[in-house]
Image 1 (cartoon, rainbow, N blue to C red):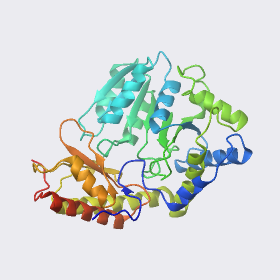
Image 2 (image 1 turned 90 degrees about the vertical axis):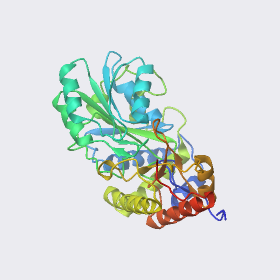
Image 3 (image 1 turned 30 degrees about the horizontal axis):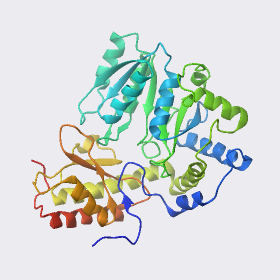
Image 4 (image 1 turned 180 degrees about the vertical axis):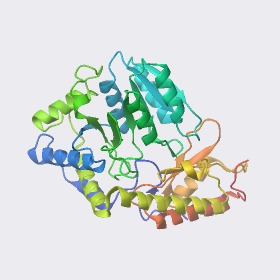
Length: 374
């Protein structure tokens, strides 16, 4: 039987299920140049900086659009036009980062590892030693295409030791995994509203070292994606350069209040870790096998091998689970068939148990007796 008494729970890496208080914050209209809205923007920027203890060293520059907009803006602004970016790739989002940097005309090199293998720290050190032309390194902290956690601290230490600059895509880790700008050297760290802070999608933001950003005027090849210009204009006027996502900003402000009330990053991580534990245990009891080993699995999104049973098809599987109130996510791997289940959002272990039950009932309806891979 379908469950249409409420909105489906989004077991995805974003957009994700938000709280009623966050959704309620979007019921009011705001003037984009009004002082009250500008004050909300300022408070959001300050609160975001506090999540990574970056207030003394970095500035928070918000950017309209999805997280990819903010990643592209950061690369376009921080990497000089004659710079050389080394991108560490073990999934689709690292591949995307390399692609967008190349489309901006930057020189790009790629250090690739398998999708179930964390970024190789020793190989990064060797590449930086052997190629002095590399000016910047880019890393996806939690690669959302699989859920793998990359060794951010170790990579950051090596990049700093080599005298290079680090850009971090923390889209799926910011707010849930510990990141401390006081001890972690990075020039820029990028995230977005619709992830682990549990706001709606529509706004990215970058934490950039103030002394670095001050020297980046003229680097960007894009007007809209110029972080230096966006930051300079906000500092001078308190306003956004172009029409801001007003409802998203105020909803993110409400989500940040709830984030702080819950206990901040540590509490958010604990809830997501419990969600992940309940999910993986329940799915394994049904016969599913996670793609990643537990040692490299972040508690953000879990990739599962698709059942080898010929009666399995993702579209039917997805539709039947959705009819029971849960939205899953398709796989993003090219070599094996998978699907993904998110552990983040305004949900807890009870929702994860109900999701596993929905998957169990779906297997029965589809006549699938063995959920394991070939």
